[in-house]
Length: 112
Length: 114
Image (cartoon, rainbow over the protein chains, first blue to last red):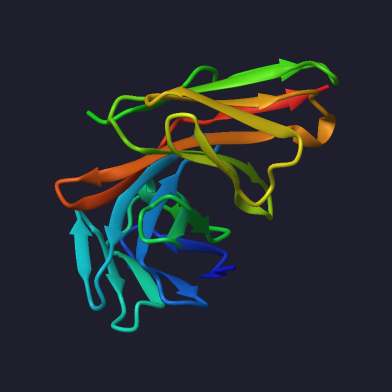
């Protein structure tokens, strides 16, 4: 089965600092989803990447998928307390978003 | 605004009870899923459905069943709840919109079995 490794497992950054979260797959990805989760709540869709080398941005969050489609990074610029939460990457195993495998998540805390 | 809605945010049930978790999506998505999320284990796929009345087992189907009688609704059933089924349950749906594949989640149901 496809394994997804996220790093780091947790991260504490000062407000205003930049940060990067990585997601690495043991197999080529058909698609890679990034979600954010507040404690005790559902997952909020951030971005989906499908093509090698693809990069997408939403507000201060940028996600990239490498050319080999086995690694993705999520970069937050000038972090804010509202960015705090758990970030999860999900891999599309079948190319149809019918079976998503998730990493164990990265817990982000933003200090004042 | 796209929406996946789970019927309950919190549930407390007794061991041995039959439990129904309901999920409704309004995006006309073909695929629907049920995951459970546990500390240290991440999200694990229980069942998914790719069409009405069609279902497939995920990674941890034991102790669960599902029902999809209508495209927009996907139910997770715990035939006889046990304490090890205490967890956060997340429903999701996915489909292609405008040539892009999307997958959205509900707000989650935190189930406690006592």
